Amino acid sequence: MTAPPHGARTPGAPEELPNTQQGMRRRNLSRVLRTVATDGPLSRASVASRIGLTRAAVSTLVDELIRSGLLEELGPERPGRVGRPCSALAVSSRGPAGIGAEVGVDHLAVCAMDLRGEVRARVRRQAANRGRPPEAVLKELASLVRQVGRDAERDGLRPAGLSVAVPGLVARGTHTVVSAPNLDWHGVDVDAHLPTGLSLTVDNEANFGALAELWLGDVPEDFLHVSAEIGIGAAVVVDGRLLHGSRGFAGELGHVPVHPEGPACACGGRGCLEQYAGEEAVLRKAGLAAGPRRVALLAERAAEGDEAVRRALYGAGAALGIALTGAVNLLDPQAVVLGGALSRLAPWLLPSLARELGDRTTGPGCDVTVSTVGSDGPLLGAAQSVVRAVLDDPAGVTGPDRGGLAALDR
Image (cartoon, rainbow, N blue to C red; front, top):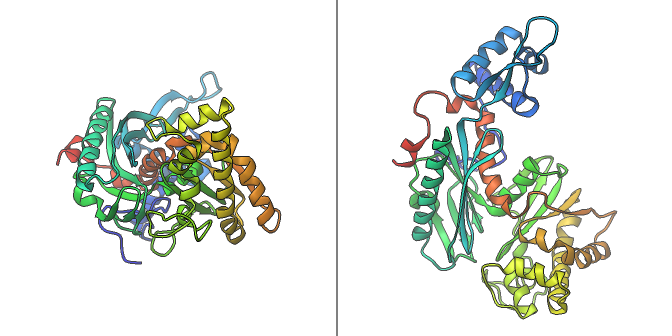
């Protein structure tokens, strides 16, 4: 694989630090910060006992993290205990923030997430992006990033990086959307049209959705994540790590043929899953017009007992089950997780999906569950990927004037 361009990262893959004294220091800073983030509030002594360093070494690292605005002291860890009180440490509610952004077929969204994983600023705007010039879409997205960045800074945060989720194929280690059929994007360099000044990562929306499930949800370490908006995407997580494929194109479930002689698809193929289980296909079969509340409308009609809608969703579930059969047989995941719009429609999709999987897969099969993160998965996963990068290498965000509005306005 070629080296990623400056600022590019592979989501879910921490940076390898050199085996030098400086590299060891950076790793230890990360160990301290991650321990407090996972188990805190903790005293310095408690951190030292957990990671196996001396109290003096941990104290030095903690002081550096406090100066950098990554940790804060809350006061006595356990008031009333015998002996000298210890000051409890927690991840700072101020300081670096991960900026996540999502380009949807019909919307744009941006959020700022602090190091505690809390969303502190957010905006979503309806936008008809299909067929719209990429530079126009990304210019509007940049304005939303700036808006969220300013809101976050007023709350004591500073942007540490930007990750963008897109509904298409992204070449691994680059910012290039090779193909996004539902946007009509081909060979689009996001970095060239998104001038924020922040370190940038671009990846498929299903990948970020799967990472959100892994980091923020309740899933095993081996699962297949399936999500839908206009199109259908999937992502594979094995041993807690995202499977990208050699070029970064793994997970294109929406373009797996369900019926090879079926209707033409925007990708150039025929009979793809999206033609049977994509939102527009389901709406068409249910006799409903497309609109801004299409998923909510399907869920409402199905809950009310609308037989046409229920038949359309049953057929979509069957098509999903057929398409998933090959992936489940090949990868043997512990679970299939339905995310995105599918999570809202799961009650009417699951019966036929589970039936097809049960009839077609070998072995004991796998659990089919519904996302606990929901349709916000790609946006939250994008923001959390920046947060994780800070936790992996806190030394990379220390020092004066790192991030913030100065970066956004360059």
